[in-house]
Amino acid sequence: MADSPDQLSPSRSALLVLADGRFPAGGHAHSGGVEQAVTAGRIRDAQDLAGFCLGRLNTTGLTSAALAATAALGADPAEVDEAADARTPSPALRSAARRLGRQLMRAARATWPCPELDALAAVRPRGAHQPVVLGVTARAAGLGPLDAAHCVLYEAVSGPATAAVRLLSLDPFEASAVLARLTPELDRVAARAAVAALDALRDGLQGLPAASAPMLDITAEAHAVRPVRLFAS
Picture 1: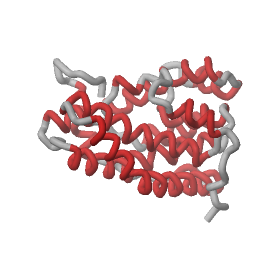
Picture 2: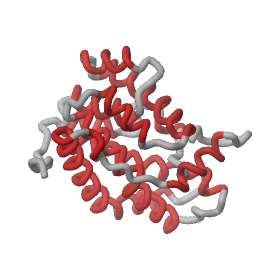
Picture 3: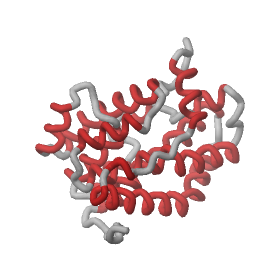
Picture 4: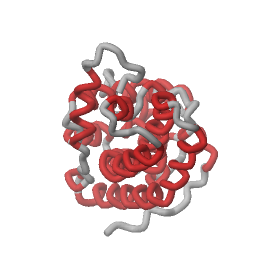
């Protein structure tokens, strides 16, 4: 196993800016699969939301966090983007990830301009996967792989929680309590993702996590063809 990834990065403030829901990265327009789950009756209350978010953390969340952490370590982002494509079987989710990547790229280049972001934008003019852009952005902001993993995982659960408040008229205090109770698991998964990224940098990207959530893939395709929807995904 590679060296421990849990050294604290010197820029706590940059991490807060990047993880802030008001950072103009476009995440507010996406529910992370919650809208379709609510429509299907699989999320009805805070308890259901907690189960959904826990599953998301340990599947697509882990995969995305490891991709971001790998990009934050300085791996070739185009190669990391190819690894992201291979781990995203749903065309709808690939499209959403690239749309979010384009929006994040615009915000990142304005906030932390750097040659690495410019190079990725040139190689992927239609947008790289959002976790890959986030990893390069974290690197530009002076953050480390664990920071990038935390950022991805926080978005993976805070986005669905915010969407559930709107879709279910869920009490915002209940939604915040769900997120607070998930923090130990979020920390655990972030550490796992950061270690996986260090190992992948040494042994090759094929060893990155590829945890999947087939129901999210299926419902993303159904959501993409809905004539009326509140969220893009």
